Length: 303
Ligand SMILES: Nc1ncnc2c1ncn2[C@@H]1O[C@H](COP(=O)(O)OP(=O)(O)OP(=O)(O)O)[C@@H](O)[C@H]1O
Image (cartoon, rainbow, N blue to C red):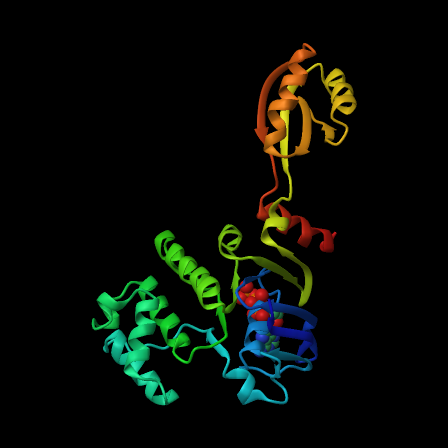
């Protein structure tokens, strides 16, 4: 993998207040990077700096190794973005909107427009007026517009905002496809934690303008599962498991024990407990969700 976007100690001061504080992270080709944080954390400000809408106060951002500070035009041509709601003329068709935009960009052929329309799944409706489109379709038209110049990185601020579950799913599938099949680097911000969990490969958590955590989603959610086994007698169970399966992490709970391990270990655990005449009353998974982890990481800093 190669790094497409790199932020190096980026800061932003507005009216004497440090809104973004020395932010550094990289996004690779082929990955969807989620930018997650509470309201006012600085997501939009960061995204606006990456797409060149506002200046940085300090640090630099490199897009395909080109500095936004020193080679703005070159760097920014690699970027496709939907930051504010894309401006569309509702009385024109989707195609006419794209054509209008393509004329401003120069060098974009009608074939290219239709290829991009196909990519976002709007071929059947592209000649209908935009005012007849659902919000999800408008979002996909915006996506087509941002893809017309073949950017290497796509940046979307809250792309699923206001969409219904079907619309969210469509956008999610399209973004994943662009990352996987076109090897694009994709940066999305969202409040919807569960959505980020499904859409992203990696997540960066921002709070008070600082990056507090960056992790692969699969590590972030739960590297291992936690199971709660309701049983008795508890002491006997813990002693026995410590003896026969010393690699397990066991913690005493109210009604039984909490075990950190894999699903595959469960039958063995149950079997050995039953053979010791320990009564199993119930078992359930209590692994942390992304939301739990998010609250944990952000609360830690506040506490
Ligand atoms: N032009 C500005 N003037 C003054 N303060 C600003 C300006 N732009 C942003 N801020 C402040 O900077 C902080 C970060 O704002 P930003 O919009 O980047 O956060 P966010 O993480 O995108 O939040 P949200 O999820 O609510 O959109 C906020 O406290 C905001 O009030």
